[in-house]
Image 1 (cartoon, rainbow, N blue to C red):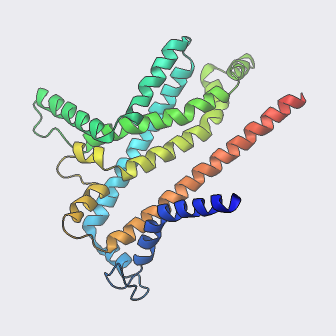
Image 2 (image 1 turned 120 degrees about the vertical axis):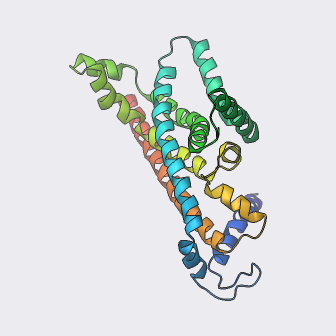
Length: 274
């Protein structure tokens, strides 16, 4: 039974990661072929860093992802604090449901609805071009925000409710109690939520496609436009770089989560001993 489960797990992992492995290998291929590995070379990485248009879309994507992450992290943390402090159980459940809607809603529905809203508002105010970088930023904040709330809220629920009150009893102002007591407790969730928001914004295509305007193109949109003709091997090199950056961020997120779980276990064992 154990052998069959290991074989089954191996097949699943092979099915999931075989395309990525092929992509990584052929990003170092000297030729354009995806069937014959003619020799190891950094040719496509060199061409990638000499392609100003692609590098510009990478910069656009990073700027958009960074701004969306910063805004959604601040707003998501504040929203999680507000939800956690709601007295009514039904009101809290309603807020959690509303927060979950952008995550469960199909991307194409979110993208089309946001596009229609931006066009309507733009025409209402007489704007010549309704879609721009700012509409993409609002759209990215919209779908990143729930993931930040989802990461921060459990940290607040794990925190003992008497800690801020104890800090204020010892002379802290409410603001000092927040920064010295609540914020350190929330910090692992804030970091994890920010990493998730950044990676989600980085590779989003559907919502970006519907809310993008002229003059601002992200990397997923550029790659999609290239598929209508030919995807050059330098895109394999770029995909390889993005893959390792994303893996590094996920590794950091998992390390933070593991460290937070260890601290929580130590805290619970200390309580049992007391």
